[in-house]
Image 1 (cartoon, rainbow, N blue to C red):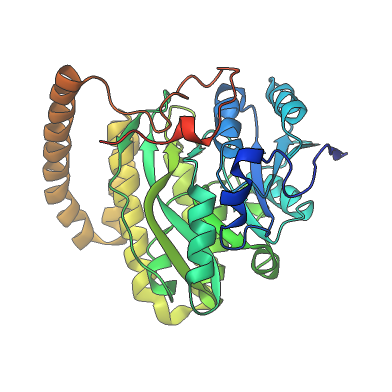
Image 2 (spheres, rainbow, N blue to C red):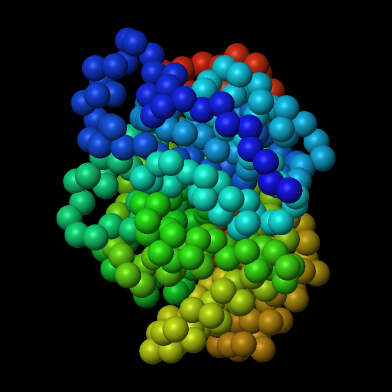
Length: 369
């Protein structure tokens, strides 16, 4: 049975007196944003994630962590943060999957806006502030504001900042190619829009096809509403050994189920859907090769041959070029590390996920490069 430990305060709970004037001047600063954190056995990184959320310069937040049947110390970590910050709330439920966990948080949300973040990802301090400002400045009917993301490793170090899309407005055709937002942690959405679209798909869990719940919701939003981009790397998307997106075949199954449903709604976009599946197969094959899983990579490429032999032949040409470039970049990074030190932390001064010191926004600003 679901139960909730609700020790939250009002929208300005935890507001630092020295920052009152600055926060009051922000666009829509009185609008409460509900941060939804689904967490399943998330103890390894949850402390670091919650610190990055609590350090947001936009202070009008409620932070709802949904413990989806964890058997580790996830709940204890949330309770410790709740004891220090009255904006943090804990919801506990039996394990039902990431879609159900996000929806459970949304049902309990009091905010006008929803900002999901996975329990191992990070936000830079001005992430929500920048998104709310972009939302206030945007014309038209905006259903989603996304940021660029940096890929980070298990130690919170930046490994890739190639994500730089700029698509805005009507992005439905672009969403047929894959998730424009890039992950489940970079979006901010009006709550009424999320509810109108039915929230996150909870059925993928029972089909052993978790992974693309966010893609399905964002695609549905793109059918009706405009998107806005904040062109800054404000989200840290962590890719590690246990990351859900590393289950390559399940991710493909999830993508196929989600896009099949979308294609039924918009059959006139068949060409874009076809291209999207090709790009997804190529992306998953590259990820599998990087993860030293050549058998899985070959299965994905073989599926590409079956699906589109022309795309398969193009990929055979492109893959060596891709990995030559990656090898060169790796060598350059290694040289820079020797000359200038290790790669930058996504949140300097906060790389130790189990550090109990809870610092303010300034301590988590990225270092100038």
